[in-house]
Each structure stands twice: as C-alpha cells, then as structure tokens.
Amino acid sequence: MLIQSAFAAFRQTLSPPLRAILWKSLGLTLGLLVLVWFGLTRLIQWFQASHHISEQYPLLDTLAYFLAGFGLFVALAYVMPAVSILVAGFFLDDAAEIVERTDFPGEPAGRALPFGTAMLYAARFAGLTLLVNIGALIIFFVPVVGIAAFFAANAYLLSREYFEMAAARFRPLPEAAEMRREHAATTLAAGCLLAGMMVVPVLNLVTPLFGIALMVHVHKRLAGRLPAPAPTPRLR
Image 1: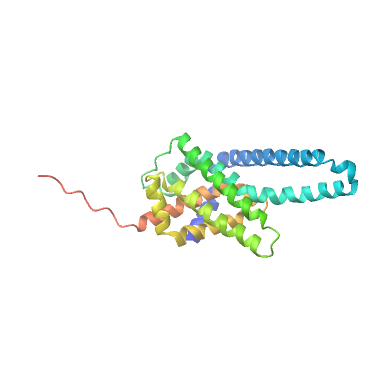
Image 2: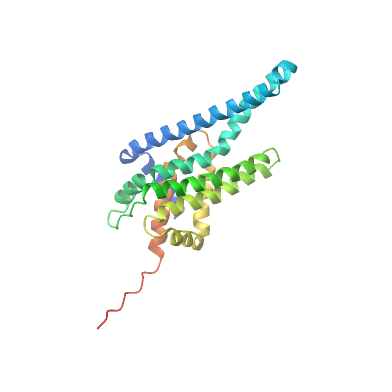
C-alpha cells in the first residue's frame, strides 16, 4: 500500500495541476531557509565581534568562519523538517483538494480547515519539531547515535503532522490523531520515507508537497479499510 501511495504522490507532485503550487512551495521553502541562514550568520558574527576573536586570535577567527560555514549547512538540515511542516500547513488544502479530485474522483472531497487553524497547528508542531531537532543536533557528532536520533525523531514527527493534517479534512483532529495511532506502523513507515528525503539535497525541497500528496493517499487507503458506520435506526 505504501509503495503505491508513494509512486502516486511522486506522480502528483510533478503533475501539471500541482505544478503552480510546487513552484510556490519551493519559493517559500527557499525563502524561509535564506532567512534562517541570514539569522545564523549574523549570530556568528555578533559572537565573534563581542568576544574579540578576530583581534586576539586571527587564525582561530579564520577557522571559526570555516567551521561556521560547515555548521550552517548541518544546522539547515536540522531546521528543514520544521520549515517543511510550516510550508505544508500553508499549502495543505489547495494541494490536498487537487489530489483528492484527480486520484479519488468518485469519493467526497475533504473540507478545508480554516487557514488560521491550519497555520496555528502547523506552527505549533513546527516549534516542537525544531526543539526536538536542536536536541538531535547537540548529539550530532556522536557516532551513529546522532544520525539515528535525527532519523527516528523526524520519522515520527513528520508522520504525525502530515497524516493528521490530511486526515483532519475528513474528521476532527482528535479522531485524526486516534486513527494515526491505530495505524501507527503504516503512518510511521510513511514518516520514514519523508525523513529519508530530508537528508537528500534538492529532493528535500519538494518534501512539503510530496508529503501532503503521500498522506492524502495513505489516509484514503486506510479509511477505505475501516468498517462502515452502522446505520442510524429510524424512529417510528
């Protein structure tokens, strides 16, 4: 089921109906990453200037700039999951509606979440994801453990966020969360796929749109397996 959903999501991500949203998603993702990059570089420059590193230790200052450049790339990789969640929240309903309409034409379309609610939920979860990834970044240089922590944490967080946002178009958020817990193995496997994409340069930029399309398919397929609700008895 997951393989079929992944291929369908990839096809949708590059399809003409989603192409306009893809370019907007890429633009917003890159814009947010540039802002993060700018903020981190200013922070490094302030730290070096406030501690007079360049005046007292010129060689150390050069080394610090070199390490800062490498460190910024590493830091951006750990910030990327939070950025992805924010971008997904912004484009969720537009992208999900296209996927539902084109791949599930005979089924009822979902109901869009209020924009404020969707962004508040995405921002709250992006903040949690950022905190967790900062913790994972601290142990980055611990062999095996650092990478494993990054992958495991983001597989869970991305599976939770993307699935619940897709499912919330059809059911209240508490029910969406309960559905995710009931199908934890499937949703976590989808999260592993998204976490794997996060570590691949360029490919990670399309993760927000791909994640939406993927979880729309996963939710639809899981919902199709659920038993139909019992008919409501008529009053005589």
